Length: 601
Image (cartoon, rainbow, N blue to C red; front, top):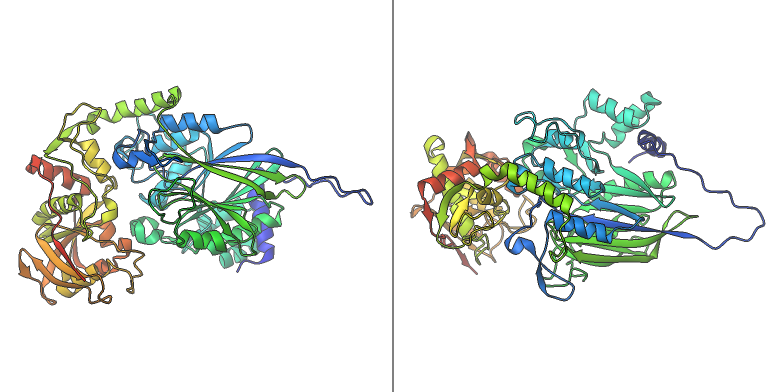
């Protein structure tokens, strides 16, 4: 629990460090009748889960159901820039809810997402919550993206030394586990640098923040406070090594602390930008409240009643909902899809005297980023520059396919593309890793391979490096560990909810084609998986098995904690290199049939 004295000191220091001074409102004139309240307008435009989609995304990732129920082509940086300009007025602030980078197409990923961050600065984003994918390359790399400098391994991009993001990344629930003296000094400096003896003790009580928790922006003479949050599940969905020094605390608790800090210095207009959200009933208008209450709704309804609205992300869905706060008031809870396909517009009035949002004036609209507008010429040229720079690598053919190979799951949970990737990983790790099977996390299969040729002109059936990279954009390292048959069964049991690993939802690992098993959907956790076979031979509890997986899974990612019990760790090539090598060895590939997992009642 943070003491009130620290709260006052902390926020005063944060504001002073940001060069902000809060002017006091005029004193009430004694015995004079109160004047009617005056309000000023504010407009927010928000994006979430952009994932570096500078070019218009293709396939289902580039389509969106609009307000009329029609499915339209949507997304692309140049189109988003046009829509943002058309939707902006003099009262506008632009914000975002994380995953702006990470899991990105090659045009952005090849340069560690500097092009995407530059684009977002060009269109005027002023503050964003961090998402889990902002940590894909680790905390140190996120700090470089925020502050500038060339990549420590790959050096400077063709654009020269990176200058850093022009907007603020926020994470109120990201703190250091074991703060160093240097980290403590940075925090003290950010908090004004006074009374350091007392502040040290209070900081240790609260925790040393690893990222700015809040940002304050002025519009029409009133301050708006933005609180940034990221899903507390981040440690289970990013590579552990890069965040080993960080703790991701409960979103509601962190938001409430930040809200109190803002309120103590008179900032009552408060907006949460949170990288967590809910799933929706499919096929609904982006303006519908189609969200199915889940972890996002928990945050939206439980954070302090002083918070006026919650703009969310992470679940890649579009919805506009009104929820109740802890005191029974109502407030907005929204999300704007993903990949730059939707912009959330929120208009509201702020009372000049109280400096609080008049919630009855809040009007929100999820506007689809259609491609029927004229693309912004400056951003078009900007994207083309980066496209030209990466083209020699992106357009290089690596193999052929005879038909679409999709990442759409069968009833068992496996997909043709998931099977193909697992086969590629097994082939790449047999020599050196001595592997017998491979398992691939389904969330790492980011797009389908399509038979139809692209605008690059490679022709039908040709797979380019850029297309392969879009499928697997994480640059994970292939590894191998030894598991017993019993441990392998535990890994497979951890695909399902209800176990001690606290799996959030069912995640079926994609198996190599030589590995088969059966699971029962209705059986209790721990007894779901049976009849495991490798190359048709039954697996026993005591035998040892060399299993290939990426370093994300081997580190316990996606709540597959049993991987951590593996022995004799071996590391091999990058996953994308394993994938391209498989095409080199098998120049024409037919879509695999996802029939390796049998489901019984």
